[in-house]
Image (cartoon, rainbow, N blue to C red; front, side, top):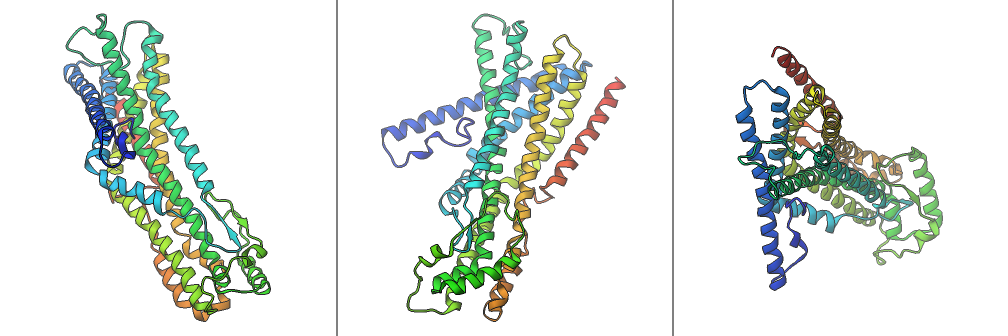
Length: 431
């Protein structure tokens, strides 16, 4: 996000002083320079479309439309992240970093966030590398052709093939392509990482909920016989494997559990210990829902636009790929094919990981049934019913509050895009 000027480089510098002032000034100049690069390329493509409109070269016209949409989206993301919703973005990042639970509560078993951390790092690295490779590949084409061409074919009001001028123009287009890669990777990549981490938090909550009675026993003080009996009853209803999205469950030895002193040595009341343990789970659930609501507020408007952008981009890229008939068509088709795969990849991670969050939000009530609830039904019934009633409200990330983000939305967008592609091909066939 810093490379894309969507987040300030000086975010780690607090307070005042000469160094902080210099960082802020340099950061401001860097942001202005990036806006200039993206805006001037967008303006040149708009001029190119205007000049070539109605000349019959649909292949070139559609290619210009692709780049116009890409740079328009890049500028929109820069403004949205840096200028329109920076406060909400800071709130999301801060609450994720400061208040997440790294480990489930004390019980017969536990999970940690290490699995979710590994998954998020793997996915984000793969996605960022793909974005940069896919967009920077366009910079290789003029070098491969050796024809003094530019990575982005657009109109210039001067002769860009002149010495020094060509190098400057090539440099600006290279910066523009890097900005495209950084903007696309940051906007969708942050959404993906947040979804993976929150799914990991659901894993932690799931484990804490099913061990809530064991946690209560440990907090009030108990003996190994009672714990072993409770563990036997819990294992009967908790035999299903693969209960977690990203976490790996590990067992805690009973002897280790008994080493933890009671939290309230003056009281051995089970109900008080249960209230403390259950309150921790309720607070954790509220924290997850709070972060998801902030994500929904931040991402819902731009994902509504993203669905339309991806639909047109898939349609246009597929059309240009099938129309490439020039001498350099092979390299051009490879480059366009990368764009098409990146667009599909981006839409997939948006929809798939939103679906993963939705699936995990459905399982909180299920976790309580995995505890030996029948042992203390009279004391805990009202708390269990209250929690399950609230947990029934599954959280669904949306695109503009209009359509849900899930795998079905991914399939539907692809179907719509190729319907437009068929229409565009028929228009081209009629001349």
